[in-house]
Image 1 (cartoon, rainbow, N blue to C red):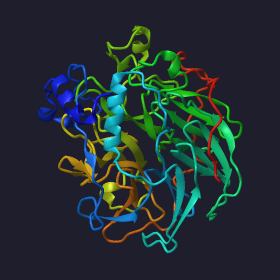
Image 2 (spheres, rainbow, N blue to C red):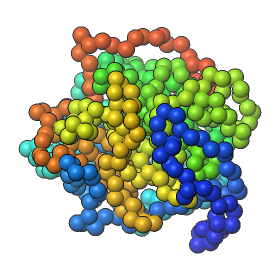
Image 3 (cartoon, helix red, strand yellow):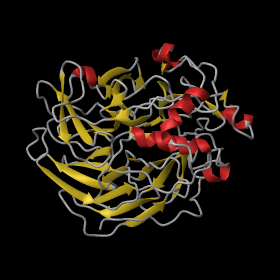
Image 4 (spheres, rainbow, N blue to C red):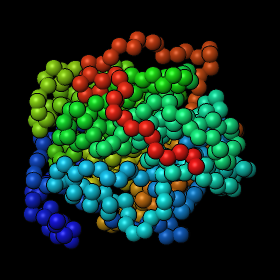
Length: 486
């Protein structure tokens, strides 16, 4: 096996010099990104920020009018945050399943890259959900309780009708849960299995509760970069599922989405939005990650094409019929920023400049020779659509060629401040109005519309065309979930 100490030299020898450092990444932000010609090499472009963590007196950087503080430190790889209607915040901490098969030499290299990018050394046990409580709404946590432990790589959560839904990597679990509880005493039921191992390339499964409260939407990422593990391994993947909350019956809502996360509904239009990590190894400036509304039955290109009809020649067999149906996403975020978090700001108590759009958590690049991402950006919206270029909101995660932390999931806390889960820094950051403004009362992440509110039209339950990649049926060989609330 290759000594990891010489891997950087191998990358230098195998990868041709690219134009990443001279490329204007801002040209790939917005509805019509610049897409250069693909660049392919024996080994991918590489620049990894080694995690060094935060000193006790260090915090990220925010613009004038905002203030940032540590909401919770000493966590174990916090990935997502979720606010309950009473203001309690759930922090989902997780690491991916172990034992993923290696199908290519590149997979060994990628695993080494990810180990550096997530920080080395001894790490606390993860795969748990911690409850944070700010009893007097002063922006500081007064109580901290580990609500669930020993879960199987959890990510998304949702709450309604005294039921807590947890998306582990292989199933959606349901727990009876009354607001205010600080411990779980009942074992979960399985609402529906989800595609899990043994490969489980993109293991994160995010959740969003529909505005009518009847359905859960769950993200299921692809099982590869560009289907190199075969199409059979992609069944049920690269898609967003709709799951009936009462019965667990599921179908594909949209497909062709390589690795969707940050599922959330626009509070004014009721449209489902997501951020998506696009494919790697086409060069430092392809393919832009993106944010998009998610149309029912739509196909977004993966693996055969990107940004509509831009064909990926590496994928065999080619499918021009599928490329013809692919639609382009709404808004590009630039290449390899690894967008993983998304939240709308309309119900926040932030200054007006930050209260009519979306925040996006960009975990940061590795498949480039110049860093991209490693920050939280804001996208202004007008009439339910992105209207301007992104604006940097939370920065300072990079320190030269090192990273103090990496932002992932985002949310609005019970006081109306922005929360940022920093998995590499093991911290949740709180970004609030500098003048101390807070919302009149807590508002949970899950927003169920009133009976009088206008609901999105029902467009039927027909399957999308991409049945061989993401069939509208449950995977036949999904194992029962491991772990629970012990």
